[in-house]
Length: 236
Picture 1 (cartoon, rainbow, N blue to C red):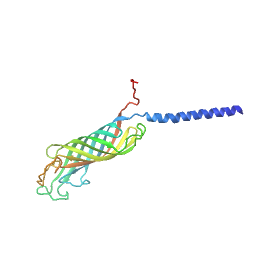
Picture 2: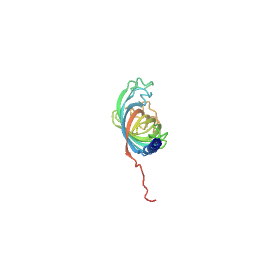
Picture 3: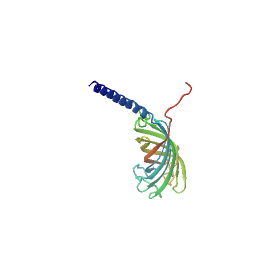
Picture 4: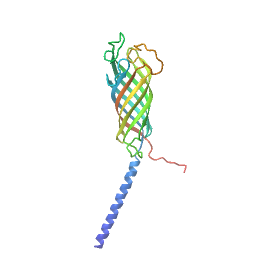
């Protein structure tokens, strides 16, 4: 009977020690999951032109495709390079405003290439919560940047643009990111529709009396370039 009691006690102590070891080792293993410096991926969405021949954000959308690379200096921020191509269109008859002759029945459909660099700021630290203490899988974010617009209505039009927007991102897996965002690109060009100033309005300023365009995009990216898990200091 004494032997049975001692055996039970030993088994209880051994099981307790194993469970305690597992309990302490699991958080340590989770916290050593690496952070990643970059994301690469692509996106699809809709592009809408806003100008003299379309004043409605929901009207005449065209398809858009993107490739993007992000560098993440911290869980709260990112610097993103976007390359996008889309189609946009408009017409004078259904623009909801008066157009002087000969632009009353003017219609167009053009392609546009956008190359932009922007700075993103997350509302909360972004991550799985394992590689960074307090990180969230879901966070809204805002951004602003500068870019180049290349369009070809009748001849190639080249200009600068300033993208401003907001979105929400969600970490599907430790290295997989899903993001939905809306952006407006303010341009310094009034010929994205192929017509410069049909109303003959004299104005000054970089973004006054100019065309702009928006995009609504869903993107998927993959994390690369892991940061080191342990930093060694030999100067102790």
